[in-house]
Image (cartoon, rainbow, N blue to C red; front, side, top):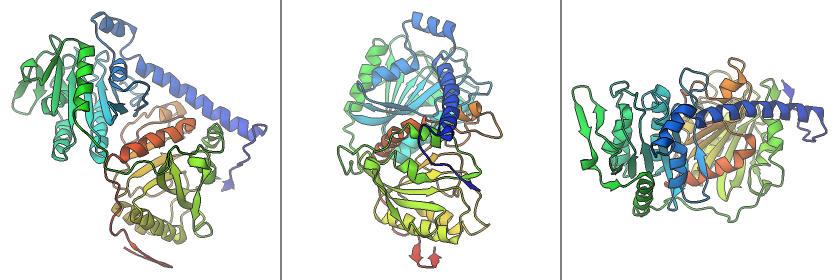
Length: 461
């Protein structure tokens, strides 16, 4: 393999070429985002507004605290399929009355938005994020008139909501209109249900043997209009008296990186045939560009070390694209053990590269599976480390070329089958990871008591 030219000088032709390639992919990604924001098209949106109704992103914006960020998850899922980009549902992380929440908002202008498999996948992923990070779930529900109740009676959402109830994670549902398919479980099984008077007809839940109706009579609160419903939802979240259980930022305000994030555009144009220096990425996302490397002279195909991101401590594991040997495995297992002992979240930077020899990565996979601190993954070009993690809290990727599909479809999350939370602009990496670190600290951040005993030259699991 050749070594990536890391000369980050704008006058360098390689710099400009790689930067331009990434910008082209971001243009295609923005086009997909425009499609998702357009919903069911101009005619459907105009008709919806004419009824005095708000679009899903308008509802989300009115629900959130003023000037607070909203991290939308998988915003262009299903792009490149027969399902419209975005799959007819908006999901993401936002702050309501000072409380970090997971938000789900159906788009009633998109036919089939309540029942297509991509929408179901996004809703279930949102519920899982709510559960594992102990974040209240707020759903803004309304289905397209064309959606049939029996179209997708999978029941997966019902199981997810039941799990949230067991874990005592609160759920709030605002119903703006007809609700069908699996989405009908949201108002029926949420802790708090708010309906708009006269706009929330009977909700029919598909069950194998019978249908259970839900109506305005069962609502906890009735709103006079959509804006009033959102006001009541904010009030409801305020009364939850919800507090984070994890520690806050260790350093506040955090120091900004000393290097420009624009350089990440060049680094994002990753060729699988090159080696990659993750230290250049870390210098542009970590607080004050400060990275304390762990065992820099051992297992050099894997970079490990400590830093802070928006004040939160992180333990970083990043591969360079070379084959992992037993030295990297021992180094990684030792480092994962230390991160768990220090109750510190693990941040993985994955770069495409050849896997290690069969069986030699097993100790690392085992250690990852037993690790209990939050895992966050950034794909800078593809999976380059074992996928033995039980489930990362968040997974994001940069818009890179894919040799099996077009770059646009890759950037648009064509398949939507894995827990990929979206393709992001490399320049937004620090902000996105900062939002995620804050979210994972809503739950207790605690490492496993035992993830493997490290001894020099040997790993016992």
